[in-house]
Length: 134
Image (cartoon, rainbow, N blue to C red; front, side, top):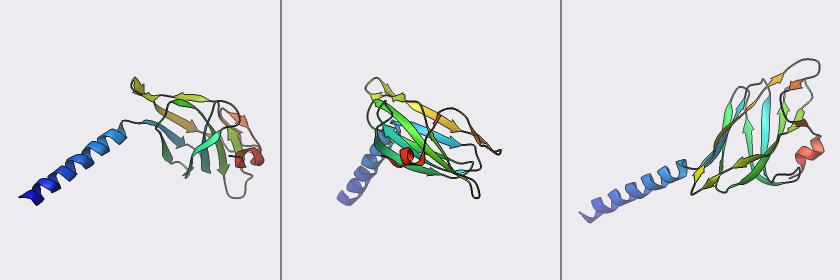
């Protein structure tokens, strides 16, 4: 009888942890391009931040980044397509809320129109060196 009770308790604890972790600030990054993307989510509101998380996203796919703290963040992206030059971009800072008042649920969509010079929507073009800096 004690073993059954203990197993039930573990299930409740696991369920509680699962529900708690789902109520967390998150950013879903959608890649609406033919390119594979590496997205660095940086902590900070200026051009120089500290790395929060790196996520790789395949063509026409998405990925999610979770946040445990309120703060400002921005993205640095490298978009790669075989036979083409990579595209590097830095996004504008955005605020994430994750506290007793609530939490942020955001979506960021990347689109690139392929031509002789790829056209990237939003953000600012950066160099490979700036992308590589954490």
